[in-house]
Amino acid sequence: MIFTKDDFGPNFHWGVSTAAYQIEGAHDSDGKGPSVWDQFVSKKGKIQDGSNGNHACNHYHNYAEDVALIQSLNIPNYRFSIAWSRIFPEGVGNINQAGVDYYNRLIDACLASDVVPWITLYHWDLPLALQRKGGWVNREVLHWFEEYVTACVKLFGDRVKNWMVLNEPMVFTGAGYFLGYHAPGVKGIKNFVPAMHHATLCQSLGGRIIRDLRPDAHIGTTFSCSHIDPASQETKDIKAAKRFDALLNRLFIEPAMGLGYPVEDLPIAKRVEDYLEVDDEKNMPFDFDFVGLQNYTREVVRHNWYIPYLQGQIVKAEDRDVERTEMGWEVYPKGIYKMLKRFNSYENVKSILVTENGVAFDDQVDSGYVKDPRRVKFLQSYISEVLKAKRNGVKVDGYFIWSLMDNFEWAEGYAPRFGIVHNDFETQKRVVKDSGYWYSRFLKSSKVMLSDDPKKSMV
Ligand code: NOJ
Image (tube, rainbow, N blue to C red; front, side):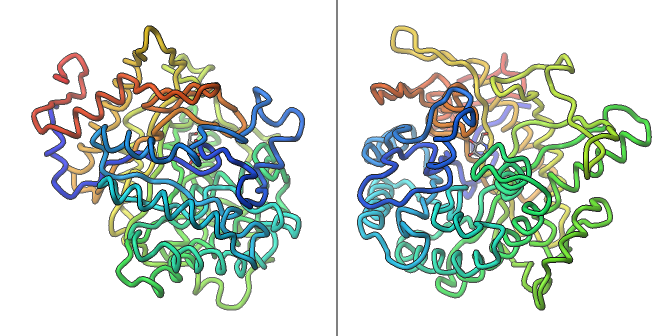
C-alpha cells in the first residue's frame, strides 16, 4: 500500500503529544505546589535510574522555542497537559496566578504559531495536598476535580477548543493505586476499586463541565489499549485473556459509552457495588465528541492460578522471540488496527483520535544527527494500519505521535527515548531526529509517499 497524507483527508488531525510532569521541569517554581509525582520520585528505588522530573526538558522555560520547533516541523496540533498543582497549589482553593500565566503564554505561543493547542486536563499529577486526603480513593475527588476543571475551562476555554479529560485512567489507577509502581505508590484492591470508580465518574463529569461552559468545545478523553491474544488455544488461557481484555481495554471506555462496567468478564469489577451511590450509573456515560485511543503494543496472556483476582499473567515479549523496543514492548502494528476496529464498534463512539502512538529506542546523537530508522519504520507501519482502518470504515480522525521530545518516562526515568526530537537533559539541547524530519516532510507535502513496506517509501 502506497499513500500520502492526502489519503487521510483534509480534516485529519496530525499532531504530537506531551504531558506536564514529563517535560515541564520547574517543579517548585512560581508558586507551583507539589504533586504525587514530586513526592514519589523522592522515594528510594521507585525510579529505575534514580532520576526525577524536577527539571525534565525545562519546557516551562523553553516552551516558546519548543512551540517554534513544532511549527517548523509542520506539525499542526500540539497536545499537552496542565499540571493541576500549578493552578491550585493546594489542589483546591487559591489560584496561583503565575501558573495560569504560564499556560496563557503557552497557549498564546501556539496560536501565534498556527499550532492548535489540545489540552489534557489530567495526566497523572494529582496535587499532593489532595493525596494526603486519600486522592482518587476519596469520593471528595469529584468536588476537587469539578473545581479544577471549571477553573481551567473558564481560564483557557476562550482560546482552546480541544479538550481531553483524563489520560489513561487504567494506568494511573492500576499502576498508582493497585500495583503501587506509579505515584502515589498505593496498593491493593481496596484502593483500586474506589479509585477506578471515582475516575470513571470524573471522566464524564469533566465532559459535562466543559460542555456546559463551552458548548462549542471539542471534547474527548483518552484510553490506553492493547490487543490481547491468549498464549494458547486452551480454554483456561482464552478465559484469562478475556479477563485481561476486560481490565485493560474495556473497564473505562464501556461505562463512558453507557454500557456499565464489564462485570461479567471481570469479576473484580463487581466490587464497585460497595462504592456505588444513587445516580452514579446514570452519571457514568457522556457523549464525548471523540475518544482518544493510545496504543503501543499487544499483550499475550496465559492462565496462572496463583495470580490474585485475575488468575492470569502477561507473557513478556522477551520470552516470545519478537521484535522489541527499549521498553521491552513487542512491535505489533496490526494491534492498532484491531483496537481501532474494536473502539469503532461501540455504537456511541462518534470519532476516534489516536492521541498517542510511538516508540522508545536507544537513540544517540552522532555528529549532530540522530539516525533512528527503526522509529521511522515503526511509525510508518502503524500509520499504514490507521489508514487501513479508515479505509475500512473506522471513524478515525487524528493521529498524534508520542512524543515531541525525549522526556521523563515515569518509573523508567530517562532511559527510554520516545521523542522525534532528541533532548540532552544536561544542556537542554534539542536535536531533531531523522523521524522528526521524516514526519515533517510527510506533513508538508502531498507528494511524499509512504508505504507499509518501508523499502518502497519515497521520503
Ligand atoms: C502513555 C502515557 O500517557 C505517557 O505518559 C507515556 O509516556 C507513554 N504512554 C509511553 O509509555
